Amino acid sequence: MAAVEDHARGRLISDAPVARAVPVALRYDPGFSPATVRFVLPGGVEWSFPRALLEDGIQQPAHRGDIAVWPCGRAQTVVEFHGEEQVSVVQFDSVALSRFLEHTYAAGASSLTTH
Image (cartoon, rainbow, N blue to C red; front, side, top):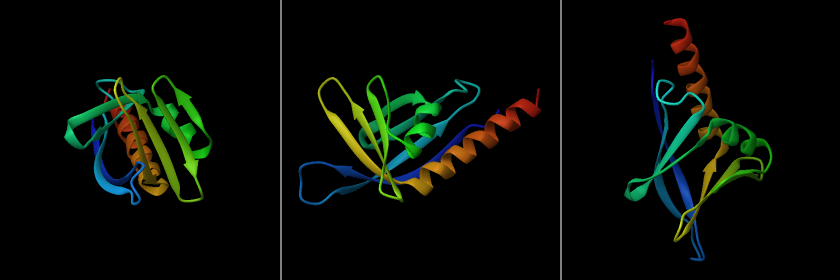
């Protein structure tokens, strides 16, 4: 089964005057959990959540548990992660997230054809 690891540049949104660019690893492993994606933020902070939440959130505001995803204008998507002690808000180009989703669908389809 083909695991996927894409990389995207996000912009960490805070009360600072300028958003800070951060690298984010986008991961999907259909052998581990075919319905789950993982985002790894700087410092090794990893968030796992349903792929369907990301799919929905690119189009319209969506929320499940500690994670919210919503479109921001025509070309951006915001992902908000609520931890015990902090909230991280990261803005992505929607194209990068859509490309990642396409890769996850392809990996899922290839895992089905190998069985």
